Image 1 (cartoon, helix red, strand yellow):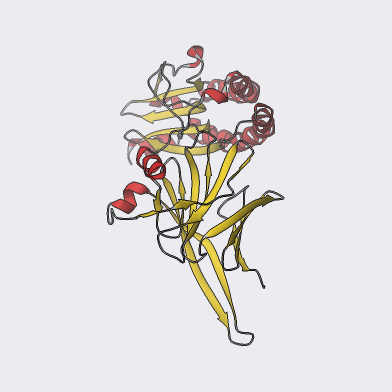
Image 2 (spheres, one colour; image 1 turned 180 degrees about the horizontal axis):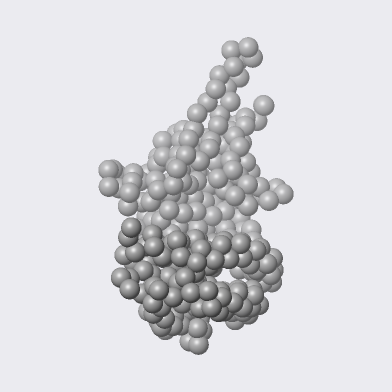
Length: 319
């Protein structure tokens, strides 16, 4: 039996794992409402998820249980020259005769909460009842205090100073008047959501229904690995408008059957764009009850839920 399996069967690991799986989800539920209220009050436009990860493998097989506020899409800290982060972790790594262990709230925004040293614990102690009881009580206290301290750290962050990491090539192509010329959602930081597009003809009434649904996630780099000629020229039509600190623009693609709609920052950077190969040019758009309604010039109506832009409904004006 290897060292990791021995550790996993120990009293320490078993009690720790049970405690964390029980408490982390409850802590997340406790933090989330206050966190969302802070974002609302600060009018931050890019909500960040609070996520739980259990037995998180990283850097050569070390194990961590993590509760984190994910800043992966934001620029690195100038102070630490590392990505921004705010996370609570319970860390365990397995060696031949000892384990490495620590529990900590870490923040790139607070110099007092930088990652601390790892405690070395003899593997023989992992089944010592007195030692295990003491350590588990320490972790329990840490978890009990965590929601309060986590929220305190969130309140210290100036979210408006976080710069979104925009993808250089996508932004450059957008400035030049180009978008990927296939059914997809392209995000300004480089992620893609490929669209599954199909139509169904009803012979009973002669009507054709068009459908759009998300198929998979990918990146520009992955797409260009197999085809670097994905760009098509687009035009911005008259009628662009501002809504909730962004600007919606729309128009046509390089072929007559294509259209698109895009959200940009007020300074012009692309937040996201959705390209349609079937819509014909989109010549009008408006926001109605939190939905972006786009009108193609041949009667296609595209309804985009702005709370989740992958929720797209397609109808015809005469439906």
